[in-house]
Image 1: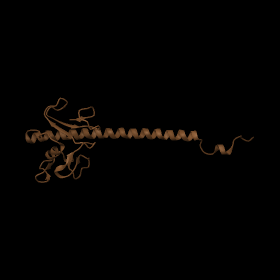
Image 2: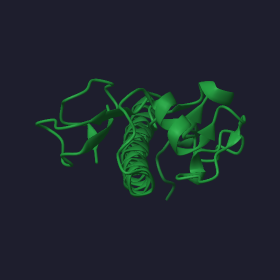
Image 3: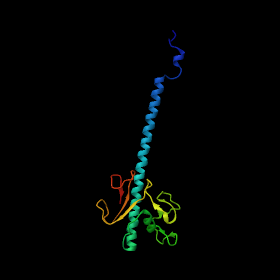
Image 4: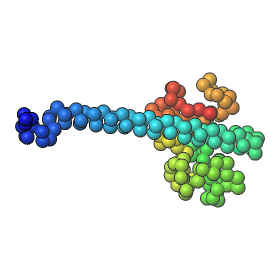
Length: 161
């Protein structure tokens, strides 16, 4: 007895099978991209936390050496105090944060050259440095702030010392 089927029917996939396969592939790609973005964001947050802690430690060391914290300003003035000596155009005698070297810049901490170097967070924004009491500050003496992914200060995604 011969099976009753057509040879044309056994070749290839049906349209429904193709649509199901493509749909599954698209769903898996969407999950992969979403997971990758989550991991990238978590890595940027961790990097910013580490940078804030290193800058905080450097400021504490600066205070031990000089008797007070540096005056508030932008990240360029903070870079100048913690790494760069503009008068000699070389690093100062004591480098408080060696990762700020704009020549090697392996970790992406800095942007610019010479005296115009800025310390930037993983999202490309300058760190905020404030001296004195701030109601939101964890440290009453000074505050180092990364505005986080959204670039807006004083909200939930800020990273502070």
